Amino acid sequence: MAIVADGDDAAYEAFWRERARTELVMHSITCSLAEQPSPRAVRARAREWVTAVLAAAEGVEKRKNKTRRCA
Image 1: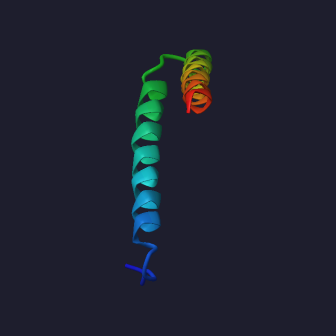
Image 2: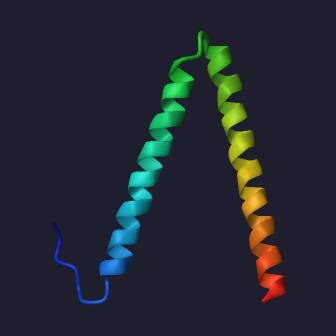
């Protein structure tokens, strides 16, 4: 393990939490794509994932904007 300067513990932990989350999500998406029966189906499923992620991002963005205006 690398030596972490005082005060950097929170940033270090946040980095590794986010990296672990990304690995789990990407593994899930990769497994979903691997289950598809053909290359064309893989592409179609990938587009569905992209659409779902973008929709989720828009929802989060709207909630954050609404919260910011209320504060």
